[in-house]
Length: 371
Image 1 (cartoon, rainbow, N blue to C red):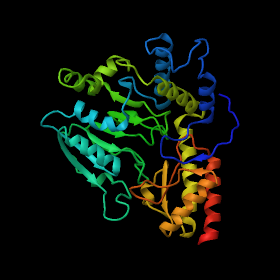
Image 2: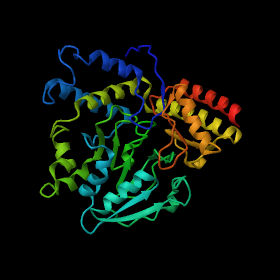
Image 3: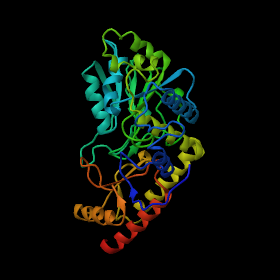
Image 4: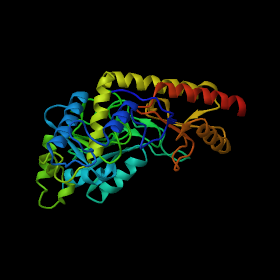
């Protein structure tokens, strides 16, 4: 992949988020006509050999990248992670059974709300607290109160709004572990075999918005197949898996983008190299936040996210000024989520390391002028 030099701001948006510049360049070159095809990826039939090859190649690169075992299916769906909040219990939570949910932030709260519409839910742990930021950490394994024979245990691996992250998947025994990994998927090595199902919207680390990646273990698909007569077809995992993500017209451009990003990640050295780079970027930024006390991280240090770095300034007035001045300086998207306020720097896989240096320099200058 070649790279074009253009005047771009540093995009700290939580999503849709920064994409690798070589991927954007390739998209631009191929937008009017795919090589050897004579038409755009936006125009080709999803039933064509060209798109089927594109889909298969994207799946193969994802399998290689994450070392996905052969007894897992990879499915490309629509509707974002929010639709998965309903699809997971609709497919996997049988009448009379209980699903365990770990409550660590706004998105897990939404997942719990949707699951309760389907069946029995046990909140196995919650780190919610009183205060301006309701969640500042993820629970320890010892805090989990799991249901014997639970249908599954659901977690949110990284909390985009609150800036917290599980450093590893919790041990939940024999229960199937379901992970909403939308904001940190493929940001570091992942042991897929410890999970029964992983889902993620693409728009943070995987590609353009519009497609959702689901990695699901074969045995869980049997629960879906048992519900073919009662579940809407578009909400049944087994139907999508059996039709190789082509039951209906998929978001073809987004799938194409995911395939390009997967190849780019492999070129970077795979998930181990990507994880090391992400850890270094986050460490550089957290060191500046912790340096003087002018900036204050909102997440407990043991739960800090490598993807979404959240922090506050001494006053809300200074925070508003920080957002205004940083935007003028070419640092876009640093305003925190409206529900928690403060600042948030989202530094996903494609965010360049030199952007961290520019932000740190800006933070130091802002502190000198306003401390």
